[in-house]
Picture (cartoon, rainbow over the protein chains, first blue to last red):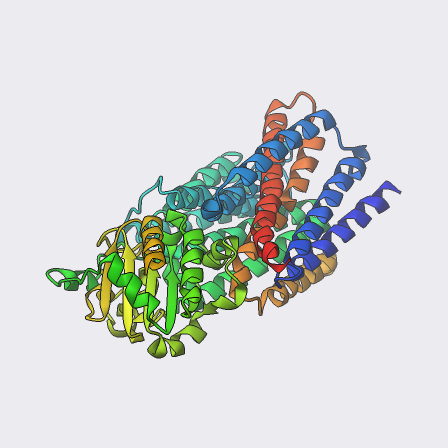
Length: 462
Length: 100
């Protein structure tokens, strides 16, 4: 009977994961979908604790399990509730790393308890360990980079080192599975060390602009690691849940790469921004045109159509609310305002949408890139708020640029462009932006939030 | 090869169908929902905690390495599950607010 109840809880759990993921895909049902999946998770966990049996023994150490879950719940809940909305991407990355670590530990303990087994068994244990460790250390580095605790690092040599490391991991894995006696128990620790190191070195050289892709990729890795756990225990809910996330995560990663017109391989070994490519030299002695607050306000107030292009700078400055206020002020003056959203603006796909939604900006005002670009020529003023690489003309006309070929927002087609920027520093990809030197472009230096506040004040006085 | 296939037939079916389902479910999702979707998927792979519970639940009482690591695994898995779902919910709350 308990076996039946266990499998029933797993079946329901699997169905809720599928339904939940499906519901997350449309705005109206997304929130419910998340709750449905969460309910299924609770059911599957409860089913495991109550009814799981191995060799006739039910789950022991229950007080300890409950204690660990209690502590985890409190910490997880607290972290998730306290985190600022701008820091969401790193939070997701962090939780992803925890899942990866969990999968790696399962493999460690499993091998520790049953060091003997078929080649298939060993392969699953080792793969779970390798993927889990890469996911863990990679996610933690991604977390550190997004939090600006870890700087970009590396270059070409790191790419070769990584390829070598990867080859080494597979070699050790092959030997450990084919001739288990040769390395014995030490294979596990060697693989743990190598994979953890690989995770670190794999994410280190990847630039911030590519972080969304990396997080999504690591997310699907953890899914796969969970699926290997499912193989290990013939556990259906781990299998379906893990594989579902593994495949969905992979597709999402590919979609994101497509949005940047780059291949996944290029993202992983391209070490974006590390090379100091040709575009950088062009900047040098060119001059930029500054514009005063009053002039900016007048320009916007008498425009017919204004487009706001948000970027990561908006998130950093927490300027989403004041941005919405600017939009309302302009609309009061009869100006048509829309937001042009680049698919990879920010540090996560949809990052800008989440932020602007928080500030109550209505959906229809957020226009995706494909729709926004044809509109640019009849837009009077584009206000770029803390975006850089996604409005770089080099992507269109400089084959030597590392971002060449990436679809960008063609803000230079508009009649005027005002760029809000803290300084002339290059964007996250580390490349110079030709846009700032174009005759139609005016620079408005300062913190995004502060500048927007002053701009709104100026508009009131007009 | 043939033996492996026949022995693991049901699992092979699950794997293939799940992969196709994952692809199907994720296609045609508007870009605005990519972040919550990723975050939701992140919470779902927290299902790995079930493996941690099994490991911990069958660890022998004198086996301190297994007990300590098992405890840690359950804790980290819980972090993934709880944190993942709560963060996703917070993101989605903002979408909901406007509708009312």
